[in-house]
Image (tube, rainbow, N blue to C red; front, side, top):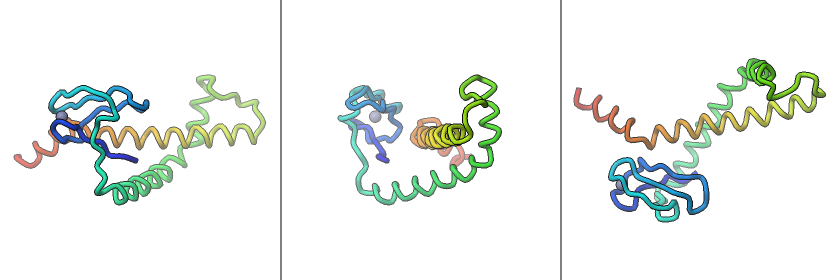
Length: 127
Ligand SMILES: [Zn+2]
C-alpha cells in the first residue's frame, strides 16, 4: 500500500482516485491534479506495508465471527441465495468477507489521512 502526499504542501490528507492517473486533491491546500502527480512516501514504505498487513490480519480476525450474521444480511437483501450449493455459499461468503475486510481497511486509511483526524489530534494536544 502506498501512502500518498500532496506535491504542493506535502500533506498526506489527499483524496486519491483508485484509477490510474485519476483525479486527486488535497484537503489542506486545495491542490487539484491527478494521482500520478502525488508524492509517494517511499522512505517508510516497507514499515508502513508491514503495519498495514498486520492491521489487515487483525481486522480479518475481528470480522470472521460476523460471517454468519453477514450471510443473513446478504440473504435478506437478495445478494446471495440460501438455495445455492453449500460450496458456492462458502465461496461467496469468503469473497464478501475479503472485500469487506479490504473496505474496512480502506475506510481506516482514509480517516488516517484525513484533515479531520489531524484536527482531532491537534485539538487533543491543546486541551
Ligand atoms: Zn496540499
